[in-house]
Image 1: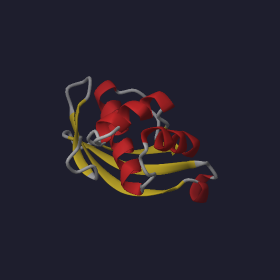
Image 2: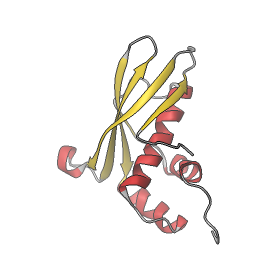
Image 3: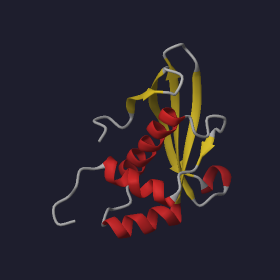
Length: 123
């Protein structure tokens, strides 16, 4: 679990570079691109000075299903934590490196939900 999901080191990419991620914003994607998703925008800065932007688009129906399954309220902070885990995964495997908007699968979200928050008693 990330201690600060708004600003963190995203790890080392497959090329040995270290990245830092900083949250820029979170908003309902319907307002900006007419999509049923929650968009979480990140600025990634490489140790060599390169800067890239990534928008993690969390598909709203997937979030609702996962929220219900996990007994986790659908909150901004939970969405930020899920998106942060996806950013960490993207950096580590360089998947979708050429894309600005990236969409985690429902299976990935379920994995991230386990990483994003500590296990709750009774779950």
